[in-house]
Image 1 (cartoon, rainbow, N blue to C red):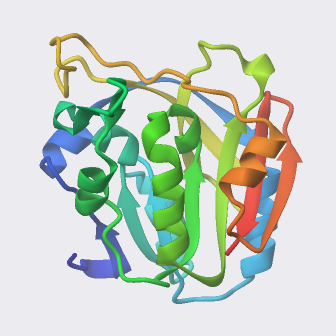
Image 2 (cartoon, one colour):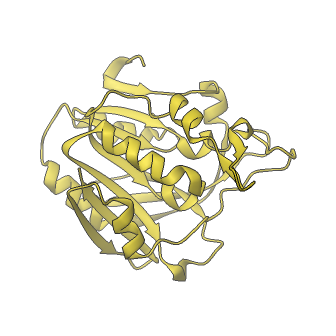
Length: 234
């Protein structure tokens, strides 16, 4: 890891910055109010010097939001990284899974108790199931005691074709949603076909509580767009 000016850190593994920035195509954008974001902003107040991890493609809006408040920003696109075909292995039953050890050796490589805030967004809904729990466990170990994590989960009413969104922070409670799809030339699957980000599963409250069982507290916010916002404390 290496820091750059304005306390901004961009961490890219397995591809160049150009490839990463070119790996997404933009669809329609829309605004939404986030109760979880508002609660997090109130809890943090005017604290400066926090280390923040933003799990998604690099967002200039998010970097600007963090740096204007004197925070240190880190970014990793775990969803895109998980699509690397070299990660595909098979378990003893012959089922296809992703190699979590290899994935975690190349991603989320940070010191323990490093982050004050993690923006997980809707990663868990779209990430391959074999990586979800290992990623959450790695996030737990990389967060400081009392650190906060914001995550979004679709409800069953969202539908199987619910688009994957990148969230850009516009204010303490307003987010801009950008529908995302893998660029046809950015990365292809083992068969050479175009990769799309599809909803993998729908977590209910019990599943979410189990996923974050090692955290000290959890708070739910139900939004109008069939999304549960979850704010957890390490």
